[in-house]
Length: 592
Image (cartoon, rainbow, N blue to C red; front, side, top):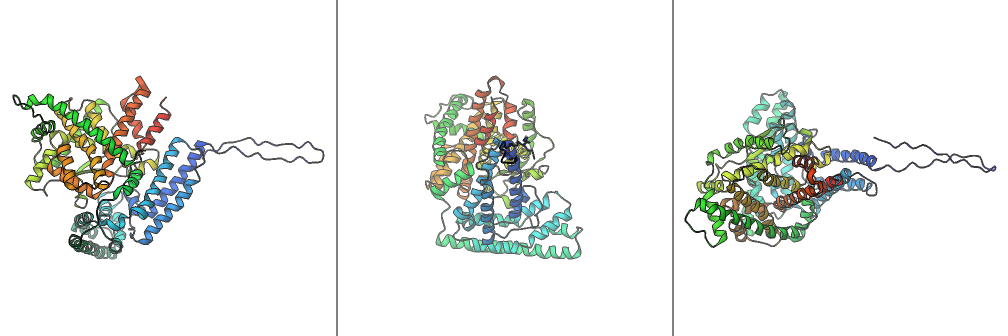
């Protein structure tokens, strides 16, 4: 740690009656950089403490020191969490009046928001009571089996230790669940049934063939069977609960305005209220619809020569979109087509020199594991900063569980053009690229405790930026589909607010999605389902995109002729996954 050396001063007494006494002068206070270094040490201690509190969070961040530990989600665990909040809130408060660098100030704000969120989840939101879907042991076990962070025997011992508490885990879950929603109960059934696929015969065969001792192998098999039984028993309990909820009625999945605004402030951290963002989205929806109409007017003669365009603007746009959407891959080729497009995106980014891509950070396209299905059709599972050499998985759900009609509707939604935009969003230069950069951030706090609006906002920004830079050769059909996709992002914000706060019903939401945003019936139905299972998260796409895009345009004005797009991207991403308002402030501090 750096110290500021100060020459000691001595005051000499001149009185003949007094002997000269040296008086030490207090050194000047530790300045901002010095305080920042002290704060970094404090934040590291807090992170280490967090891993002990939450071994699963640690595991997903790439810290496997406590991988054999499964926390029982009981009242005692919640009290430990609140004690953690109180302890570290007091420690952070010691820096309230001290000078800090911009980076340290941002880290402090992120840690304070983390503590506020942890406390709010336990004491205000209380999803541990009404959301059975948050109880599922499968994910961490799958990670231990699939990620080769250590030799197989080491990983199997972690699995062995972790399985010891599965029965108690689900017993606590049963005790916690009180007046749940029907929707979250049904999701919990689906995902826990999928979780059984993790505890399959392959896991058992690996243990039998491993270097574990005979006693460990016997214990492994015993706990393996007990784990499967615990999951089956929990699913049975939920199925009985589901029947009861259907017969007697269930708690509403809607959380209401007060909790929604509180959750929005903690999750999005944008400086706007949820209502303000909703009102902004309504205005942007009208603008996006105008853009789509303008492109439709230009493309109409190409596809409907001699046929007059309908006077109803929405009908005209819908007719053209429906016509174009027939161009899509076969259902059995959906996952393969996603894989095939990734190298094309990489080549374009490198050719246009938009951002540096690290060829040593693997991206693996895979079918979505069964225990993760039922929420989103495509997603990214990325390693944390402690495990950054591990694979990033692009999860794509195959369509084999759909009827022919459902699959056709889904494929028309993710047609030839929109599938490309989806891959930009999820992979390159969207989520995959941003999360690789986040792991390289010198601030561990910014890398670990990412802001969802920044993460999703970057992926949405990447879509627009790629088309602006010439991806697709400015094809008008691609731009029409882009605006359709962007309209979906805007509409996500509108429907989430209207569902959770204003009480919008399924018919109203489906009208927004199908008629207002030109979505296919199956996609709209899945979005309704997703909106009943989450709150606020659907607003993160639009909130983050608007902030990033607007900041880039402002930054161009500040830099003038010195603005460089690649440099902007790489500097913006160097701050990990911090909220955009903080990244903006840090970049503008040194922009002049």
